[in-house]
Length: 132
Length: 87
Image 1 (spheres, rainbow over the protein chains, first blue to last red):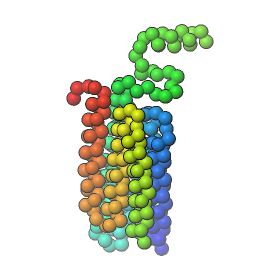
Image 2: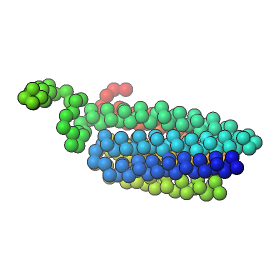
Image 3: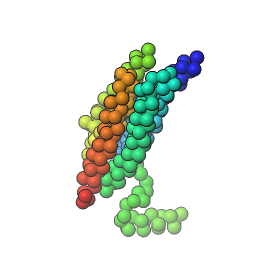
Image 4: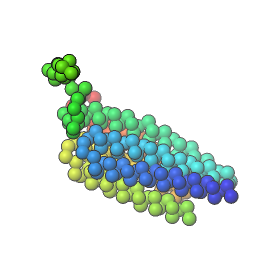
């Protein structure tokens, strides 16, 4: 009874994770810009990998309770892999976004770029705001 | 039964990897390609974890941990190179 409920929860977690990973691919294909593609490709894969690793951890816990000694190894190693993904993925995305901005890629359709350091533009923006 | 479920999930993850490869080939600028490669890396890590759970082998999950750390280092180096800075 308990193992069937755990199986259903494992399948639900797997479905959520695969759905978000496919959304990451779709956003990577459809978005118009480096920054929006980075947004889709990083956040969706991080969220999906949380759920997929959670499902494997649940499977390992079920194996452990049923007496399989491999289950505890599954739980610990998958938790370490999940921590590695959670630490490294947003940091790499941040470095990539900064590198893309400094190498001169402009965001498509952006009205104000606050990281742009040309003083003339900032003065023009301030004039416009003052006129309003 | 559980193994077939995991193998179907692996098929869908392969589809996501193929879409990311399309972006990595098509990307108009260099950061686009790097974003595609980063997404491929993350999905490969997750599919290694799934493959280890499907075949009940822990060694694939260990490989996934090492792959995560190495792909992070490679992404940081490529970002630093695109930025044009010094190491």
